[in-house]
Image (cartoon, rainbow, N blue to C red; front, side):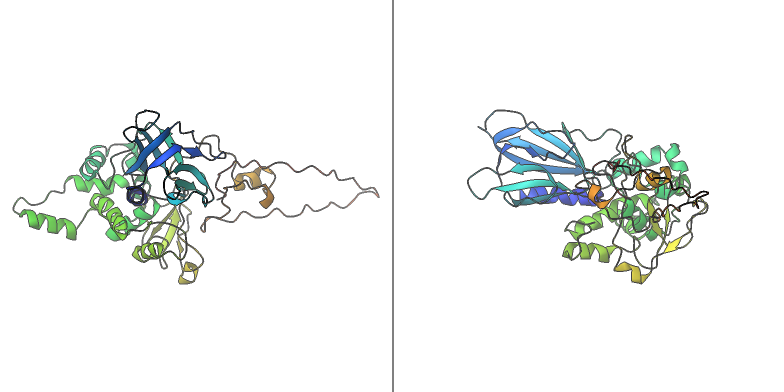
Length: 391
């Protein structure tokens, strides 16, 4: 899923693409989206973007003299697993364009679209960052570092370091691929206790005898984990393009794949953490590795078949319907292709265990010459809601 660097690249794209454009009219929402309507209408307005961690704020600013007169409106987006922005001709909207901002005449009419195939993305009105998220690892490094080291008594740091790195209260912007790359560079076992790893950083102080240039050189040559949480996402932003993605054949995605050293690469091992997310690593997994969990190595032959995978890192909605595995265990009807609602992805997590198909019920041998008439039940509608991952 998009992580901090992808949100920053998206904000750069919006600012560059919309810099000279004037938008007008109403904001249009697709009827299938469950996100709120955007009550904004203006004859002329500009659009700008700002990213912070795993969120992006879009600001709609009316131009002087625009009608009706109103204040700027801000929306905060979270991209879920597949969210992105695209600028396209208004008569060639991409599928799953769930929010659309149209340019004003004259000139060819364009649409800035928030596109989200799997519909896990969200937007909120008002422009407030989501409460509880920590400082951004990219833009607020000093505050981010202080926030982590000041709160090491929190129970989140009782967990393995690979799980703590996904806690957005402390590591706002870090996701699945970034945690793998950061831990791999420092050769830190992913299932080492987080507090054990981070407490050592509280005592780290550069020698007062070093000059400023020597201190900077020492940091660059021997960065610690929190410094890498800042510098590794910056490397992805500097690659340009879209960063993490799944569209094969795109040059910017090829550059990102070439940049990866650990995540979903051949020769690396993988395990599932407590939340079911796959962590890639090399060597010993660490003392808190899940019991009974078998480390799996990715072979070179798998590279052509499997692209990077990621799971939702925001907690799932409490009213989420039973997953495919739970339906099988409870004897609920299996969802067929015809029953899958639009926008639901059928792509399975490449590391997820396959759900066995139900075998045909064997008929018991008759004790008499009579046969029971089998009742044919009508098809039961699917219990899986729209936009729910099949994995």
